[in-house]
Image (tube, rainbow, N blue to C red; front, side, top):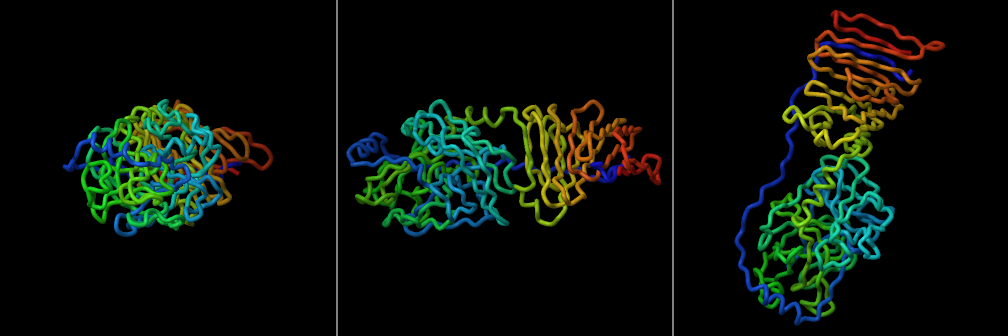
Length: 488
């Protein structure tokens, strides 16, 4: 049989504290010196400009007077990820990649539409790619396909219309603690300082970007927005009027940065954590002829706030959710893992997944059609906790312990009412569990089943096909509401 032991207990010793949900940073208003936008428009028309898409780019960044600061894994912005169209597993050997940012769902990545639309006809056609999460312990390579991709109706292949963004759904919940980023929803981007992050070629304002200079290093810098309809623009300032091609402020000194080869889909954050722009195009020709990404050149960013409803509609659509411990730093580390599925104690409309006491995912239960939990090579315990309500969605829950550790556990915790727990053995590798009239929990490669009835007059029903040496043995516990059932 699938189970070696079943435990039934009426008293719980499970912790009841809830994890705090990061609500994101707050933005502060800033005052910037602005000049006439008509003057900037005349300058743009008077110059010999080059407009280029960034589909051959990885990420950022070029610094004004020095190489921008690097950001190591685990020090922030792990949710800024590389989009790789090759077969590599690390950002240092990316093949013609773009980049993206993990959204608040923990299951979607925001990038540029042209990264997914190679022939620029308004329809994604990239086939397959991978998002590379560079974490402290290892890189996690998460495959995606064209079928996982959504672009707004405004994207027609024309960069100037500002619809150059795409949302790509991951098959499983992204690694934690890679940051989940919310989007900026206001209309006060103009003149505000933003943070840009990326892996791409670097250099300085004097040299421009240096081909092949990325080295797989994630870097961080700053610039300021100028609003332009559905676009947000920025220029690369050196403090002089001559290179102030947008006619805004004279820049941020040594903190000033701009995009370079590898930039497509890169995020621009307001308040360090809310995505206001997705990098779309660069405009060269303002600085030295033949030098790209030098002083005076411009970046164009898709204005995310314009497409907030489009993004929210995708993130809020009902979906099947999968947690795969092979894509979590806590998996395969040689330490047993406890995964807790429960209704949020502070919001009865939401369901949570926690590893230990750390929430790694949460969603309105109404937006979850089904749930799957896949174990790793570690011993995995899944606690389906009913103390705050039934967390199992209408489409059911699947738990695959993935052996061969022979010590994966399903713990079903009831509520304070009288519960009926039903176990049905399907065959030697699978079984189902229900609690009262709730949806079905499907099990495979799980060796131990426990029930915690929370002290009420609970009932356990155990059904199966007993053939050959198959049998069950009940051993009473030291209390009337405790005991053990062994299945062989």
